[in-house]
Length: 301
Ligand SMILES: [Zn+2]
Ligand SMILES: [Zn+2]
Image (cartoon, rainbow, N blue to C red; front, side, top):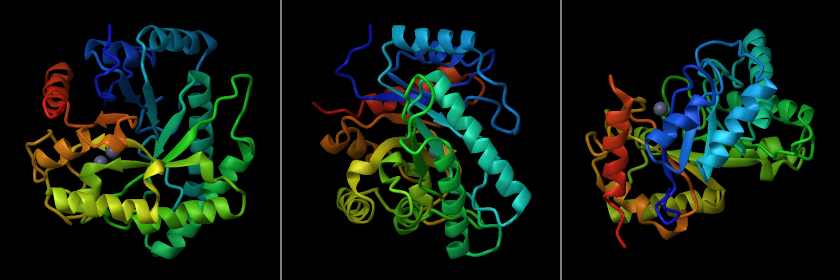
């Protein structure tokens, strides 16, 4: 039995062998949350979720008493791309991803804000917002589709600022939401996934109590803390403001353990699921366990 009082914490788990293996792996880690790719993350094509698979997945999730299940989009989708072929493929990809979420009754989908491909941040943000709006319009204006009436919240992930990345600052993320929802009233279909490694690489220092509070105040002012719907808890192999996205085990990297203590004990985030995306090394059970235990060990009563 999972203790309901334990923090909402889990890991990104593999779907090797089928999507319903993800919650089985999460059960092996005794977590109450998990994240998965609903298909191979390096390929465009994804198999349609069959009714059988969908049923099996839902049964394991419900038996496992999971409180937070998030899907993560593949690594190819780039709604900010100036290239038409890639942009069209990305819209199709996002549409299919949302459909798979509905089939699996997953209510949170994390998407990257990706790269403007040299067109500039402003153009990239416009392009991204146009693509996003088109997909969501086609997906049902009330956010519901199919018999399940599942509302899938689209969570924009804070970017590390690599290359031509957009969505690196809170302001850029706010601009995307603003542009997408102004024309359609879609605001409540968005949330933010705060990736600690990405934010640190982007220059947001949360390593001391004072700086952590300042960053959260900034987030609240620009995006609203109520829109922070998911954390990715990862330490960083690279330094503050390096704009390089390299995840490290909790407390082993440039961020150290303190930022995770602040988050794990922040009363404002009790209801926000927290997912590790730390390196799996050769044995995911061992390393995920080490990182989850490191985080659980920080919780003060
Ligand atoms: Zn992440
Ligand atoms: Zn990352």
